[in-house]
Every structure is written in C-alpha cells, then in structure tokens.
Length: 450
Image (cartoon, rainbow, N blue to C red; front, side):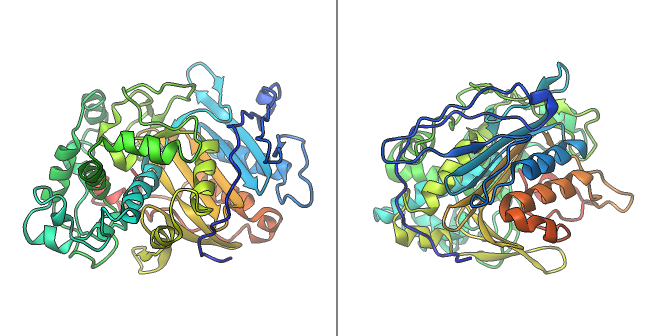
C-alpha cells in the first residue's frame, strides 16, 4: 500500500448522524439518518449485530461486532468504534458508558481524544509553513527565544518539535509530581487546576533532556505545548481559535472542539482511570480541566469526526501536497529491544499492519483512550474510543504485564483494517501506537501515551 499522500478532493457533505449497537443490550439502538450533499452518494451504514456487509465493501458487520464485543469481554468497560471502507461505514458500541448506573455505551459519543490533538496542531503549523510564516528547519529560538533559550533554542528546529526528536523532556512529571506515589491525590488535586502553556513549556524545558537535538525520537508533550505557542506567535491569535477555524471547520467537523471548561459539552461516557492498578477501583475523570493537555492533548471529538478529519487530511483538503509530504516524512520509533515498531511523522505516525501501511495517532488521557488509523488514500479507516485506561498491571519484575484487553484490541484492529483477511492473520500483531517501556521506574514520562 503506497504511503504517498493522495490529493483527490472529497465532496463536502453534511455531518451524518448514525448509531448502531453491537450487543443484545443495544438491539433497540436509534435509527440512522443519512443526509448526503447533492454531489456525494449516500454512504451505506452497516449496523451490528446481524447485518451482513456486501462483498465489495470489505466490511463484515458480524465479525466487527464480535471483535468489538471481545474488547468488552476482556475487561474494557465500554468502547465505541466506526470503520469505513470507501463509501461503506460500520458503527458499533459495546459495554457500559457508566458502570454505576449501567448506562450502555453508544456510537458517536463525545470523548477526550488526548494526543490525537497533535495531528490538528501539526496541520495548523504546516499551514503557516505553506504561507511562508514558519520554516520547518529554522531554530525554534528564532520565533520563541525566551521559551527555549540559549544553544538549545538555536539547535532545536520546528521539525524536531513536531516529530519528537527535540530532546526536550515531558512536562507531565513536573506538572503532576506526586502522580506515581499517590495518583488519586495527584489527580484530584489537579482536577480543576488551570495550567498556562508557558508554564507547561517551562516545566518541560527545565526537565532532564532525553537526548541531543535531532538525535532520536522521544515522545514529549512539551513539544506540542511549544508548537501551540508558535501558532500564537505567528498568527497573533490563540492557537485553539486558529485550529478551530482553519483545521476543524475546514475539515467539516461538527463534534470536535477544545473544551472551555472541565466539562464535556455533549453526550459522553464516564472515563475511568486505573493507572496500572494503583487507582483501585478506577475513578471517573470525565470532568477535568484539560489545560494540562492544551494543544498537545485537550481536544474532544467522536469516532466519526476523527475519520472525517483523517480522510480530509490524507486527500489533500487541509494542506498543500508539499506540506502533506513533510507531514508524512518519518523517523523510526524503536522499542526497548531496538526493533522498529512504527514511523513517526509530524503529528501523525505510520504503522505497518499485516495488510498494509496505515496513518493515524492514538491518545490516552486520564480515563479516555482513542486510536484512529487510515489507509494512505483515506479509503479504509478505523477509529475507536474506550473509557478505561492504564488497565495493565505491574508485575513483580516491575514491568507491565500483558493484558487480555490489549490482545482483544489487536483482534479488533486486524478485523477493522484487514477485513476478510483478518481470520488468517489472527496471530499477527498490529504495531503498538507507542511502545510501553519497562516500569520499574514508572513515571508519567515513561508512559507516554498521554
């Protein structure tokens, strides 16, 4: 499967409202309504259970429903997903949105999407590159000399920020200093705390460097806090306002936004954080001031909107071809054994599945997990959101133990991306979004899926 960007235009169409369930508890799911634009054919929505996909679609409704239900059966509280193959779409949900009341999960609920935000922020920076206001290979000190001062500011480029090779540490450990020792107190103490991006950037820049500028990939939310400050510097407006107008609205998204308060505006599940078993039982953090995520991880969205965003991006509706090519120019990401597990571009990554290369990102914030992947032409897509995070346990050796939930997620990814070929490839893993490191020195910095 080619990794080259495709500039085929996609006809605009109104946002569709489609819901369907995957379990018997959701048999009475709401009917789907499709409102296509005049130039666009109506998508076929495949609901589960019991609806069979057409042979040409590559979407097996029954298999997708079973694979999603397996995620819940493995221990995930609830999840909802949307899978696309061209003009065909499948939506499903499994498990519970609220374990206290028994409220069922539904498709297209709003979720906090964490680091999927980075793709939106990167698009905004690259739009300014296209306009000649930012040079990708210019030092960040040229634009923000007080943020990254001295020699580091002259050595770290804008590109290094966006592909996580800057060597700047993550601000999470300093922003939540007691997170490992007492995660409940740390998360509760900061639930309504408001962080300014300048504070987050300072905490990250003052942290121990993870390497020399350009030396290696090392995930750091600080890079994208600084990227947001860069957007403000060159546009003269808040980065959230710019991204909303020039990225979110340009992509035609209706349910994607930076929250203005600790509360999610639309229908949403509760979001439960386990922190590797240190919060027991897991607590709900769906109400949280997300200023700690900012332009690195604060967005709220839906699985449908995320698929719309990546289709618009990969088909050239958000960036000129030259900047989309830069976005898809990658550096290798290695696991602890030196094996390449993915390729990171500028706010997006590529993973090589058994049936080809897919582009996307994942995000994990306190209680909410999201993953979105699309083929290079934007035809085959998958977005999934779940409401229990860091569910893995820590073994006696200090390392994270494999969880049945991870295996079930992998099975769903294979079915969603590879379709009818998934059964023959059930034992083959889909590359992880961000490799999980040893946890004997477990800190937020070593669990970079935030």
